[in-house]
Image (tube, rainbow, N blue to C red):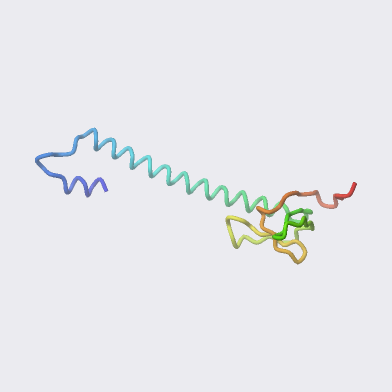
Length: 111
C-alpha cells in the first residue's frame, strides 16, 4: 500500500516524511496484531483439545437441548469442530462448551 502511494504521489507535492513514518508504523503494528491474533486462536484451539482429551474416562454433566440435566462417562473425543470439540458420552454427542460439571473417575454424585 505504501509502495503504491509513493509510486503515485505528485512529485511537486511529496508525502511528508512524518506521515510516511507514521503509516509505516501503523502497518507494522497491524502485522503484529494479526500475528498475535493467529497465535491466540491457535493456543485457544490447543487448550480446548487438551481439555476435551483430559475428560476421557471422567463423568461429566451437561444440559441437553431440552434443558434437562444429563450425565455419563466420556468414552471418545472428536475435533471435527476445532472451536468446540465434541465428547461421546454413551449414545450422546456433547459439545465441550455445554459441559457443566466433571467428576473424577469412579466418583459418585449421590450423597
